[in-house]
Length: 336
Ligand SMILES: NC(=O)C1=CN([C@@H]2O[C@H](COP(=O)(O)OP(=O)(O)OC[C@H]3O[C@@H](n4cnc5c(N)ncnc54)[C@H](O)[C@@H]3O)[C@@H](O)[C@H]2O)C=CC1
Ligand SMILES: O=C1[C@@H](O)[C@H](O)[C@@H](O)[C@H](O)[C@H]1O
Image 1: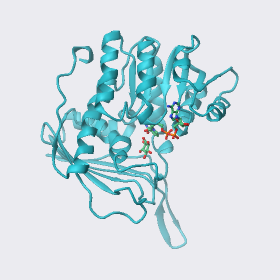
Image 2: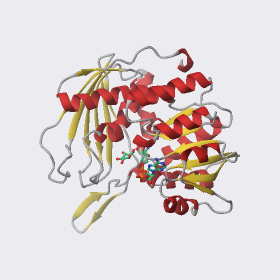
Image 3: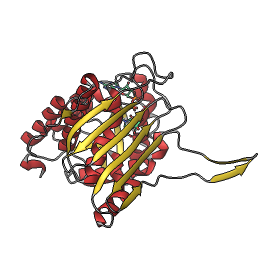
Image 4: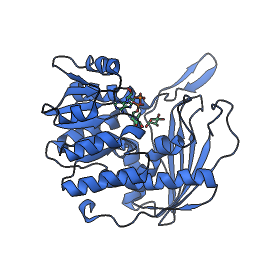
């Protein structure tokens, strides 16, 4: 039984605590940590039938002998400290995306993991576990559609609050597509550009929304991604791959189409928790199954790093309005 300590007891922290303590096989939550003690206490109350220790100090939960592995679900800007502490303690750690909010911080984690010599870090890029993305990948890999040429994506959310910045459209939101499309296409990013045109009236005054991000891959695929986080109508994730021999549109979990009161209508998803519920389950089960053996089968620290190199370039492109080049460097032998 993997004894897990969870750091960051907000929205997804609580979702993962419920999974790790009730739904998935082979794990239990033995400790939780939040900078606010009340938040940690509320989260601990979600676990029934076993004692859960409450912490407000990151190093203390990492050092707890009754904690075998860590799940980090604090905000992205606070990921470096707990992930480095876990790596230095030799404990497996699942870190929600992004690994960190700059490539330089991610690099410190990569270097610490290499020095420790054990694969310990998995990053929460759960779309790699999503049924729809995997169906698209299987079709691409079958070769029946020929070479991919253009990918059109939307990442729309109902609304964000004033703590969400223009940069977070990259580091918090587009980071999913940066990783997932790199994996889907089996390709690396060559250059990026961001176009910010008309703003929605629903964005808070300091936020540019929507933003169109254009990413060019090394093999020449062009990705056009619309990030629109105050779209007001739903949580709307789409992905269409235009290939030489046809077009593949990602299927998403669907709702019934109904006829009522003179209308033909279909609901759409409103919430990331439901849209990716199966992916989170499969992802964390995979993490548990490998963490007990000190293995990482999912996206690793290097994946977290290269996603953030691309994110850094996109943030630069937001400010410059220019096409920015991506320099990834050699993949260390440790991650090959
Ligand atoms: N994979 C996915 O689809 C999703 C990933 N996320 C990621 O999960 C992380 C958390 O997101 P949310 O749960 O939405 O945030 P949240 O704001 O709801 O929760 C964050 C929690 O961390 C606590 N916290 C902040 N700084 C801390 C620190 N230094 N030490 C300990 N606790 C600290 C806060 O008090 C809060 O309880 C982010 O990195 C986010 O990008 C969030 C939602 C979905
Ligand atoms: O990671 C996530 C959240 O942080 C974010 O708030 C949502 O809009 C994302 O799509 C979700 O997957």
